[in-house]
Length: 248
Ligand SMILES: C[S@@+](CC[C@H](N)C(=O)[O-])C[C@H]1O[C@@H](n2cnc3c(N)ncnc32)[C@H](O)[C@@H]1O
Figure 1 (spheres, rainbow, N blue to C red):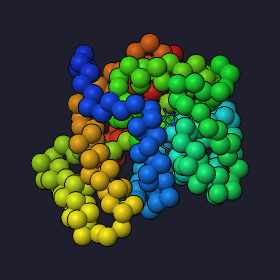
Figure 2 (cartoon, rainbow, N blue to C red):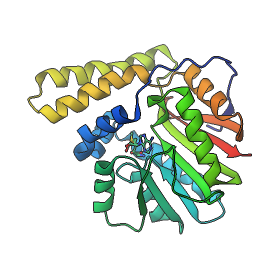
Figure 3 (spheres, helix red, strand yellow):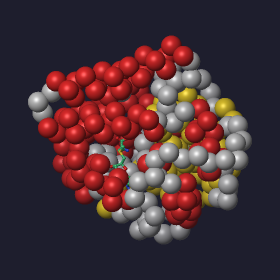
Figure 4 (cartoon, helix red, strand yellow):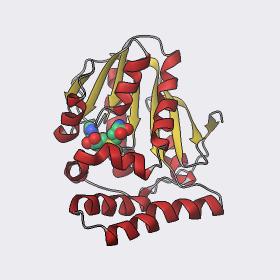
């Protein structure tokens, strides 16, 4: 499915409003098993979605790519395997970066916050972000976008990937059953404390998954001061989406 335009809402109604330290704690609790849990949680679909993001790099000129919130580095490594690019994986969680570092690929891993990126103006040829914005208030996202735009060259793309709740009634219920009810059941019967913590996080997280209207709102928020031509496409039965936008 190709990219489509978003619908203007003029009303940002964000649910998640965590502070940076709370987001950091979330990942500190689950970093050791993050990759395995991500695969189980998405029934392996995260691999397909991440490859869809990596495909976007194909048409990008220039060398310098920023993977912001790189975590354990999965998208950075996929790009490195396919393209001759210089990848900078930035994250503010040292534990997640520790796992990325243990993979020993040629990626520049940098500990920094999205609000203060240690790079010069107009440095990057593309920026990739996955599964982050839903944690933050709209003002914080605006601050991040300003900083991201500062380090990007004009005319270059920012690509954003995240989960979504399918629109159709049947798919929505299957999706809810798997992510919420099924994991709740495992949580009840599992004796493993760290698994329980993660499942608690994931089942709580479900209520903050983007719905169609939230994607419209996020696109509207992005398509403002520094970015234009913002559009999105849905992936795998509307269980994830990619937003693509261009720095003015
Ligand atoms: C859900 S994980 C995604 C990791 C990886 N991109 C992936 O696709 O698996 C979100 C990552 O973003 C990082 N993160 C969240 N807020 C951040 C911020 N303000 N600045 C830098 N990294 C941040 C977290 O530490 C975490 O590693």
